[in-house]
Image 1 (cartoon, rainbow, N blue to C red):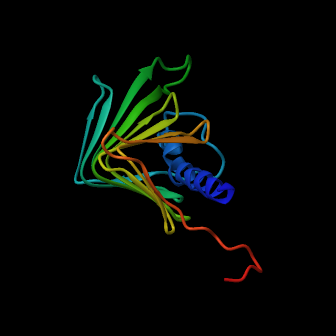
Image 2: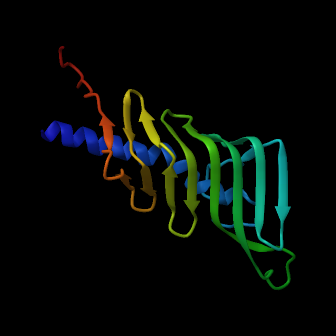
Length: 184
């Protein structure tokens, strides 16, 4: 039983790692500060882009692919909600803070190092560093997987919660790993 618990904790940890790249997407906009060393630019491709500065929103529509060195997000629509702050004195630099990013429609997040997360909707809340997957969400790392009605990743805390409705249970499929030198 202890080995099963360890495997479950490992799987949920991998779930957090599989999606932790979403956390850093905010730093790719040149108006944000705090970019960590080694983070590359995020390149977003879509059929259309609509920006509404008054509403503080940028909408990417149609075959969206948001790619960075360590992860790629695929979806039908991606909306970035932001809030502008006054420019610094003596500069033309505009400060902005991303409030949330919403990906909708066949969402798939793929880490370069392995691991995927899928669902119909993913919402990343910048201030709380929280990612919520809904719409039949599934997180996979190799053969291991976790699924439920709602998967919430608390990225700052390296913690995740998988929830399901009362008529359906959370499902985790975990394959034990073999230690080096251990036989069949």
